[in-house]
Length: 95
Image (cartoon, rainbow, N blue to C red; front, side, top):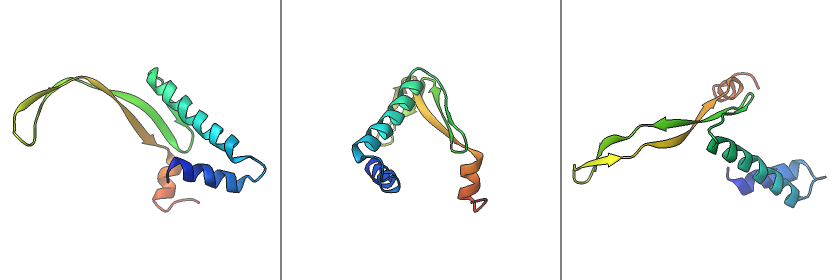
């Protein structure tokens, strides 16, 4: 599912809301998650999961084409850990 499909589905399930308002809400939620993660904060959506940022240290890597050693800089990467409800639903658990 892509963002526009999510907006469309929410709009269909909530006919009392204008699609432009739903789009604004969805975009605001995503922006808030991004802003919190960029500050290094953890974002937890109970039952769904938690977004956090992990630091990857600098290291020596290899160019797969040439085998040449390449230095890879330190970087921060997003990490998502699923919540119990989501895991249970994916594994045929409670509906």
